[in-house]
Image 1 (cartoon, rainbow, N blue to C red):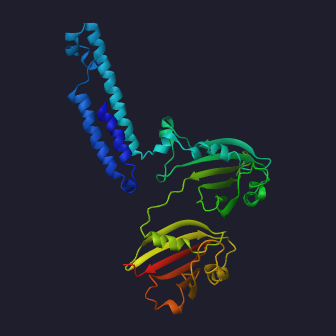
Image 2 (cartoon, helix red, strand yellow):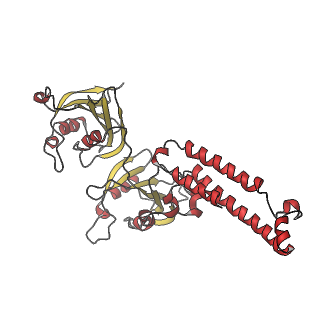
Image 3 (cartoon, one colour):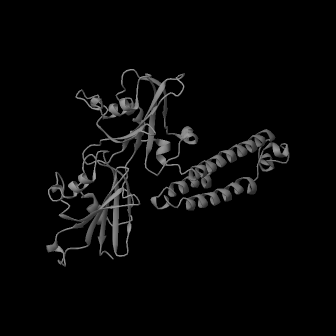
Length: 379
């Protein structure tokens, strides 16, 4: 029983962050170990007391010491313990193959409270709940869990509602922008920030505004489904997603990450992704933000020339920036790119200035702003 139990230790070892992108290493190690132990269980020690031999010439060592009836019972006990040992061996093997995390088995406080959190969503009058789908934790739920993207705890609760025939996608957008999400009686869901609505897919995404200084962990996805035939009612799917924020293992230095975080990002921008890496003589940290549909090129230039770079509302100032050039790029001139120098001319010849920093900021036609910080002279 001891050797099969050791497979759990190998599974836990495979959950270390160094194996997040090298899943094949723990899978191969655990698979080889399980194969060796399994062969030892049923080949080296034999399948005692089973119907394979019609109960003949089995358990003779037991029967020589005990009565035939007791020896027969001990033979079957040996077989039962082999089955238990095999299950103990196979279960962590499957967990390793499936990249099962500890929180998928034990749950967390946030995951356990997710259904109650979703129940606080201010549903408009006239909506009728049709069904509920939710992620679950625990051993019985492991085979039915959706694919988990990363090691951080995550889950969801999705409510499907039947809505009136007159309900439209524009009304769904107004609901997400409305004031009902937060009120003064203490029972509100909380403030949300609408990220994007796509008219072609009739879907919207929103972010739950976290407490000051916290990273966003709750997100809302709402989808409007109009009945094509009229035989079924219109539907709205509202999914509350939870994804615990964990600091990534950056490929650049912490100094570069800290400098990028000092960039004064407007409150109505929502970061969607980050791409970082090293260059020939430095590092680059590029952040992608979703901006309001009304955000224009003039707004981009106004932000770059604004006072918040040296006079932030809160926190340490990033420093003075100088816009070198803004131009249209792309095959259809539909992208707008600005090159920005950090600092002023008086500091250019300062030997103690440190790495030379530049910014490249672009506005894409899909209302995405890229903010790339380059720090040269680090190598």
